[in-house]
Length: 238
Image 1 (cartoon, helix red, strand yellow):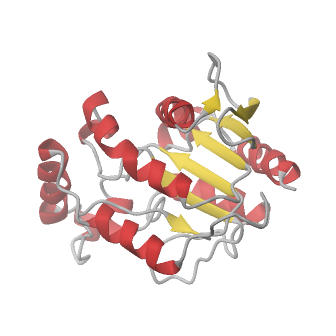
Image 2: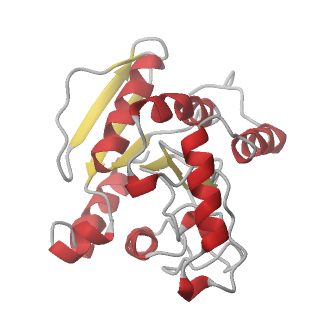
């Protein structure tokens, strides 16, 4: 990074947010997210569901980027904020809070006072997919949004990829962005320093199991394991 770095403006971020929210490119996802928003879950029958694509959330000047899979049907698809309103968010934001990236460990709704410092959270898919499984075509359609976020973060130093699909999406994006990315395996807590072949930047990629209920309830991922990931991320920031 040098004095010639072009830093994005608030209007740049707002334009991207508006583009994401207004997207209707994938008919299957549009139908599903809106159906869920109409029918609702009994526990949330009094909620006005978001029911649209979910933009990224956090500090636009962040050096840490966290990349998940997609909004949960009754989590982010309900609340309109990444990893908000479900158990995945509880686990993730607790770890971010413990590492000093979040001002609180609770993420219930968009106006709950949560703020991130030096961290930004996004996903490879912006709409809640049926069965939490976006298709390859849907992921390809959505990838430009993640590419635009990456372009708006010239200060980025560390990416934490949550889950195999998030990891694969990050690899494709980084290769497209000029990083020399070899064949890498996915696992929990792996650390890959990557050199940019176009932009001579060293970027750290860290892998983590996704904090889904399936992983946390089966013991595949626990809070201590996720805490270790963000302690590592914090240690790599310069």
